[in-house]
Amino acid sequence: MLKRKYPCRIDGIIEAREVEIGVGCVVEAGAYIGGKNDTATRVRLGDFCHIGSGARITAPEFEIGDYSKLHSNSLGHGKLPLRIGRNCWIGSGVILDSMGGLTVDDNVGIGSHTQIWTHIQFGDIVEGCRFYSSKPMFIPKDVWFVGHCLVSPVTIGEKSMALAGSVITREMLPNHVYGGVPAEDLSEKLGVQFQNRSIKQKYCKMRLLVEEFVSKNPAHKGKLEVITSMAQRREGITCFDVSTRTYTRTYSRAEVDFMRAYVPLVKFTPAEEP
Image (cartoon, rainbow, N blue to C red; front, side, top):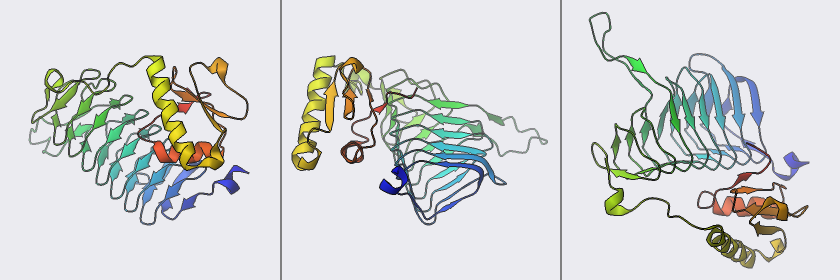
């Protein structure tokens, strides 16, 4: 039923022994997903994700979550799995290196032409080159690399942010803002990415967005609700819980249209999933 309601458009190539495709996915013509030197072991595309034209993924395992977008001419490659979470926005021409293994959590923004590196290798190791290493990389929730960033496999804090053109060679603290070459902490000068908001403030902001959406789409009136506890959820209605940042997924047209309109500026994940 859902596949008929929200059909996929797979115009690119997927080569994997195990393929799982959600509803409403788009893989544009010219995109390729497969293994580094062979067929991939597993590929999983979440609901309503989008892979742009010319994007090329070569990794043994690849995952991209619900409502995430990997734009045109991006490259993901490596000998270890590459995993991208939900509600992510990855711009055109991005390089995602998974030689050491790369996991991108939910709600992450990676601006155009940013490069995420998990390995260093080129020099002749027989001749004595000392620079040959790889390291797993984890990018936590709500991190934002604005664009044209170069990122080494360092420890990155949740909700941290790197301004355009930053070269990241050291730890990024949670909810701090960095910039420069090499990047320095600019939080005292510019402020942090996320200000603290009470549950009431979040509720009011989300309520305004839903009301704005419904005013433009009156057919969806009564199909979306903002709540502050899952105890308030109503059967058959998509409820956005601002206290847990989750929603009750119904796959209604109102829900999907709202998510498509507001992700990545509003980011909720399904309540029934971890």
